[in-house]
Image (cartoon, rainbow, N blue to C red):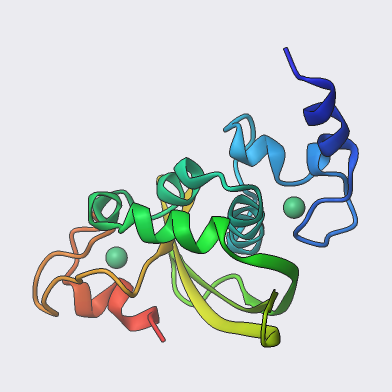
Length: 164
Ligand SMILES: [Zn+2]
Ligand SMILES: [Zn+2]
């Protein structure tokens, strides 16, 4: 039961800039009908979720142990009050360890002061075949405590090692 507006949006080029339509790019990830094939695809789908205001997806694509710690109101503010312009993926390092990847990207957005750029090196972890974003801004465990990803390793020997 898609509205004409939504059907139209799905036919448009995906905001993440792959050149594919939203329906063939990030939408199936948002709807959980397809898993992101790698960390870059997950990162792109998170950008598109920010553009479209899909806050639930921003939360769901973060490491599960971090989800309750996210400042959802702040994410919502940032999503809704930002005039997103475009996304550039500079580098995708798909395997920086057994279960980790990094993506360097920049997102541009327009403000009253002109166009601004948000540049980020994001870290991702694969848990049971599914990629998640590791949020470096929420409270993290001590280095000797169990890792947030549930690997059973100490945090310092696992996800801490890939956070930039
Ligand atoms: Zn996309
Ligand atoms: Zn870990």
